[in-house]
Length: 261
Image (tube, rainbow, N blue to C red):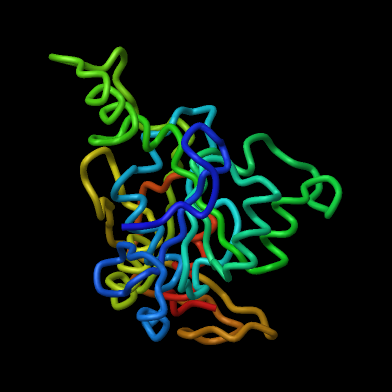
């Protein structure tokens, strides 16, 4: 379903270029026939990748998920590679790929600065609006993932895991308060951005009702209540599990869906 754009097997720069189709969020090979396909967004693709290899299954020392880019950006071409090198990135730019799925993380350890000289690949990808996603150990342990494929290739019989993959200890729990009417939209936005996954279960959350109080300052622009006095309103406390790698995306999605200032 794709063609290699360079080098034979064994070269770490082997990569494949795909044309993304909106019907299934899967991939088809680049061809002039597909030039008019409606483009998808980065978030549509990351959702599918997270279903294939849940990020919370990655090793605690790993760094997977969307590492560079804007989840709202449209994607017409997606490049796959093992390692995102400067040469691979240069080809992605030439081919007008808007997203790269690199097996190994392009950001592995914390970085203190991103410049053209200190982190050329990250800097150039961001500058050219190319999103970068990594699956690494999440794909290794996923059902049907790297380890299962290698076991099949080697003809192993009655294979079983050496150790069980546990959800990352770096997972977070988001807690927020919202009017009851906002709850469905907030949940939908958070789940779509990657929150609410616990093992083999999706869209997990907990909510409870209560009374919230607040007093808007003179320069505030409250969506409900009045300035200068203490307001009491019915609110829902919502708790949602969220992988650390998706935290920023989920918070951004929640803010867009929330009616509060």
